[in-house]
Image (cartoon, rainbow, N blue to C red; front, side, top):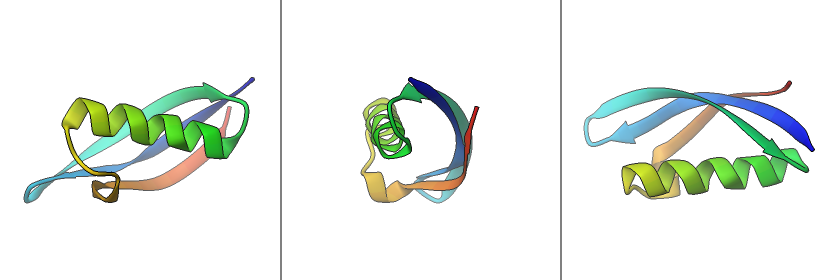
Amino acid sequence: MTEFKFSGRVKLGIEEQPFTREIEAESEKHAQDKLYSQLTSEQNISRSKVEIENTEEI
């Protein structure tokens, strides 16, 4: 498994909150899906409110 580091912003109403997450997954696509799942579950928002600005393999 590979670890990926994501950073970006989550839109919460009129505010934007920055985030940085490290996710372990088999591929970048799978890691991105896990990230969306975690953030949307925690913040109770839709995936369209999550903006990924940077992805890097650690």
